[in-house]
Image 1: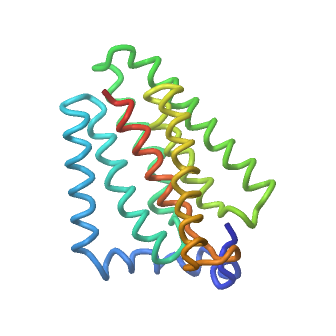
Image 2 (image 1 turned 90 degrees about the vertical axis):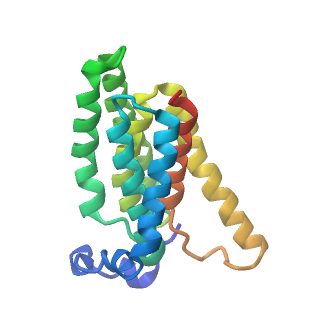
Length: 201
């Protein structure tokens, strides 16, 4: 997906102070979204050791979605710390989870594998994907990997499937053309949550 020219020509550092604007300008929808996703996760996961990690993923997913839709950007202050926070929260669940050590190993493998998959795509077709998507991918791979290879594959497939269906729907309805830019971050986050929801039982 081509990045819009104004964003492509602008230094990420010059945009650093602007990424909170979509969150500050519409706090109520953002808070409602965070509460709704958190409630769904609590209902699906229940009182399990990894619940705090998943609640963090749910909240940051809503924040990233709001920013990416508004600015076509996945800000580093949300994505990069999520590697550390997600790993720490999942790591804290290891002693209280059956096979926790193996799950955490799979999480790290999933993180590296999804980051590599997106990095290769970005390197091969840099105009089709933003590097912010690459940076986010490792975080999502961490969570999907925690639930195993099936969750990882389903979540990854769901990212591209939901994004593709949405893009086709826009083209068919003539609400976008082939040169239009559609942020992929929300579909990455949705796909990851689908993988988690269906494999967290």
